[in-house]
Image (cartoon, rainbow, N blue to C red; front, side, top):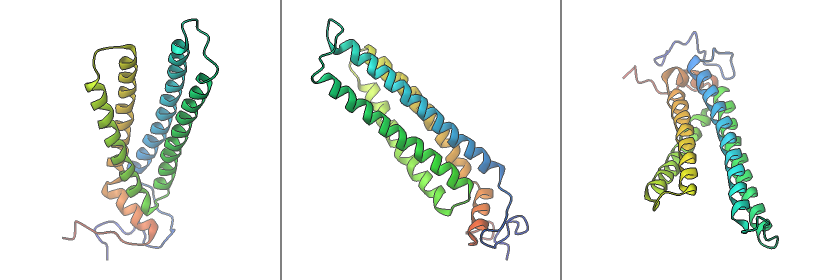
Length: 183
């Protein structure tokens, strides 16, 4: 039974060698790009955050070493932790999807949905901010970066749910997926 896709190109034996669709390769590249942009964004956040922190530390330019160093250290640690988790998730999903893991598309779509909600919150925060200031301008630059990452995630997610990718994943897992062409 063909289940609506070419069984010669996608044999049903688990782990059998099958040709990876070009749309999956493109999604893989987009996910790697997402990881890279996320890393650049984290570096931007660190540089700008430390710069603003140093400028606001004290009028003389010498930070108060008692609480300032602790606060800056915690802030830098949080940014690094979030960046490592985000980049790690991008890379994990990129390689898991490229390998045809059945769970990877679903996890990728859920992560994209969560990120979409966070971007909406980011947009609302920028739009509701009172007055223009340097911090709002920098926050807006962060929003632009978030929107670029969101667009990359959208592209990757849409590619992951194409029928050729579905057939590839079904063939790799040995479980023929549902066929909408047979209905």
